Amino acid sequence: MKFEKKSLKFLEKYLNTSSPTGYEHRGQEVWMDYIRPYVDKIEIDHYGTCYGIINPEAEFKVVIEAHADEISWYVNYITDDGLIYVIRNGGSDQTIAPSKVVHIHGEKGIVKGVFGWPAIHTRTNQNEPTPKIENIFIDCGATTKKEVEDLGIYVGCMITYPDEFFELNDRYFVCRALDNRIGGFMIAEVARLLKENKKTIPFGLYITNSVQEEVGLYGADMIADVIKPNIAIVTDVTHDTTTPMIEKKKEGDQKCGAGPVIFFAPTVHHIIRELIIDTAKTKKIPYQRAASSRITGTDTDAFALSNGGVPSALISLPLRYMHTTVEMVAKEDVGNVIKLIYETVLKIKPEMKLKYH
Image (cartoon, rainbow, N blue to C red; front, top):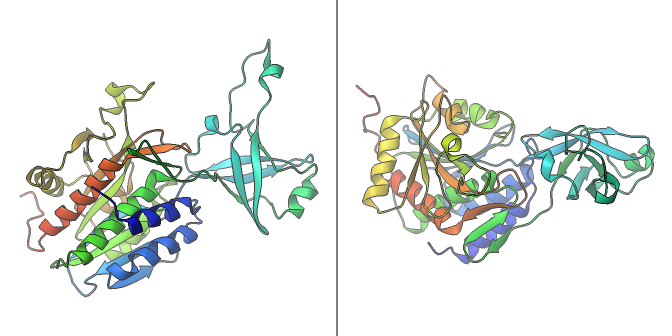
């Protein structure tokens, strides 16, 4: 799939806009501006989950959903010498932190800092230290706690990585926070295609970009109760397990470039999943299969378990190096996830059977 210039411009701007969990509003503004021409109505809830609606008066409701938040850090403690210790906001990986540049979102604006680490020369003849939450720290160039606070930095300030979007070998998109703003991009593209291809659908379609997935699926849990959908199709990322140090017997066998990953799990509704698989087969869209025990760990679970049970399914995008600043996805897979969701939406009918018996 070849991407429109306006689509790529949106993707770059959206990914480069910091949207840490609990502070997603800047990214959500970029997302809403993009989908506005393609939907009939836009809503936003108290915590920042946004959704565009096509056919808002329809009784039968279908959600296509992604999550908007990225992992980050909180300022947790400032030493008398002006060094900053942190706690996680989401699943931030302490092992990649040393030597990374950070943006500290202070009360006076963004302040640059660096995660410090002792030089290799000073670690000779001792047990090699491992980065842990207890020993990683940020240096913002201050020498006292007061200097830090004079910069507008206090306990509770958010910290993000500034790493920006680029394309690699004309095959991959690379950026921090592809998990899962790439999902927000993909569902926005579905809305664009429906509009530009002048497709009509016999139900209300809710293109939903949820907040706070990284800390417990909270945004999806809240918005499911607001929308009360009849069907939910969720997209998120999953691991490319072909890179070193990943055990396929545990994590499954998924690969970037081999197509969208359709999940099998207790919270995944059989009929919706089979509709997606049938769509992939008839439209000749490559796909992969993956299994998840108990839960998927994605917003699929929140929708499936809401409102007495909502038929829900999960289409995932293979991704390398999850929760790092160099997350990678295959451009081909992104296009195929968009196509699969788009074609599946066109097959949904309000009268379709959703009960197993």
